Amino acid sequence: MGNLWIGPPGSMYEIDQAAKSFDRTADLGVSEFKSLGGRVTVTRNLAPVRRIKLAWDLLPPAQARVLDRIARRIDSPGPVFLVDPASGNVLAPRQAAGRGTKGATGITGLGQWFRTGPSGTVTESTTVPGTFTFTAADANSAVAWSCVGTEGAIGDFPVSPGLQISFRAPTAIAALGTVGVGIDFKKADGAYLTTASASGPLVTGTVPAGAAYVTPTAKPGTAGSYSLAGACLTYGGTAADGVPGDGLPPMSVTGYSDAPGRPLPFRNFSLDLVEVSSATG
Image (cartoon, rainbow, N blue to C red; front, side, top):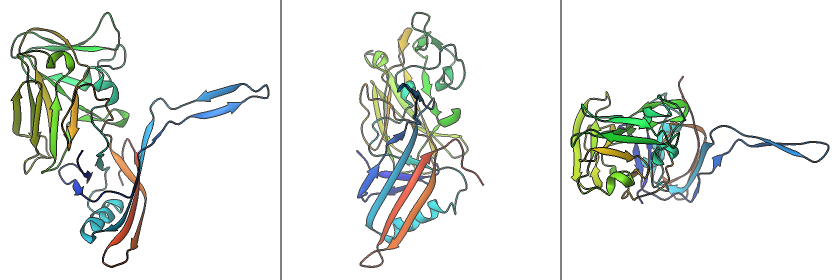
C-alpha cells in the first residue's frame, strides 16, 4: 500500500503522513418511505457516490499549504483526483469485472476498452449480455483500458511523476504463456511519452518526469477471444488478480478546516471530498 496523493493530473502531491481519521464510505443515496400500513418503499441512486473525509494532526507546513491551496482551488478550478491508499484497483467496478451496460457501445460498454493496434475487437458476449471480451485476430492484437469517471467522463488515468503504477492483465489473458503487458505514459496534452512493458501478465513502473496520464495495455500474443474480467490497475502497490475495482473518479472539496497546531508551525487539517461529474468556476 502506498501513500495518499491528491491534486490535478500531473500535479498530484504526495501526503506521506498517515491521516488520523479516514472515512471513505460511499453515499448509497437510499431513501425509505413507510406507508400507513407499515410497508416500506425504497428508492436509491443508480450509482453510489463516494465521499471521503480526512483529518491530520500536526501536519508539516509544506503539506498543509498544498492541501490549503487545493481546498481553495487556487491553482486549478477543476476537479482533483485522490489516490486512495486503501484502494487496490482504480479500474471502475464493472470495468474490472469485464462488464458494462447491455447493448451499449459507448461510455459504459465498449468505451471502457479500445484496441491499440490495427487488429482485434472488443465485443459484447452473445451468451452473457453485458459481459465483454477481446478477440485477438493475431499475435499483434492488443487492448487498452480507459479511465471511466462519474457521469461518463472517459480518458487516460491521471498520475503524477514519482507515483508507482502496477497493472495485471485480465485473468483469461494472464493465463496465456504468450501474454505481454504495458503502461503507456503520456504528457498533459495526451501526447505519448514512453512505455513500461513486460513479458507476462504483470508490469510495474514509476511515473517519469513530464507524465500526467497512463494507459494500461495487454497483448494476448495468441489469436482467440478472451474475457476482460479480472484486470487490475494499482497505484502505490502491486496489482493482483481478481481485486474489485474502486474507480478513480474526479472529486471536489466540499469543506475543510485548518488550525494551527502545537507546536507551530505544524497544523491540524481536515478535508471533505465528494465524487463529482465536474467542478468548474
